[in-house]
Length: 162
Image (tube, rainbow, N blue to C red; front, side, top):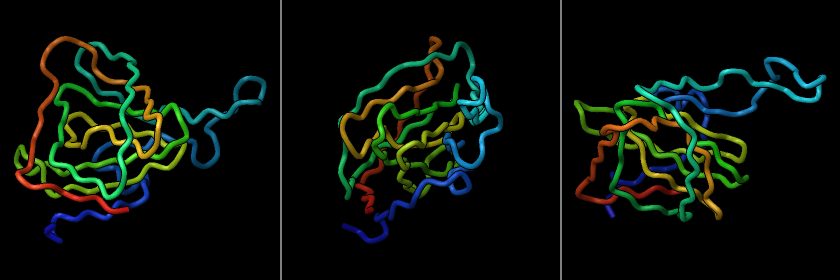
């Protein structure tokens, strides 16, 4: 294993994740109280950006363990993609900057229970990687016809450590 291909996963924060989208969470005080004051609403926490129709799907993924090895990243040029966990399990978020149409050096984050993400349109990202079973997510993204997936595979593994 090459040391320059090792990535140390950091906690997911809105500031660190901002170049790739938004962290969706109920952090801080709610924007307003609703339902006779029994429910806090954190309003408009993700910028949906899709060409065509947006929809809600459910994904169930096998879990992964750290250290986690990967080569594949992908992006969706026609729409953002939000992942909202339907369990309290953390999940691994891998992203990479765009370097002239190809992904640059990836970064990794661990989403805490109660955090979701919205990946910006065109953001390079790893595949769904829950750190516990079941890996169940509601996904809000583009559900229209037409190509909306670009994949890139490195010729060597990257390794994410916890």
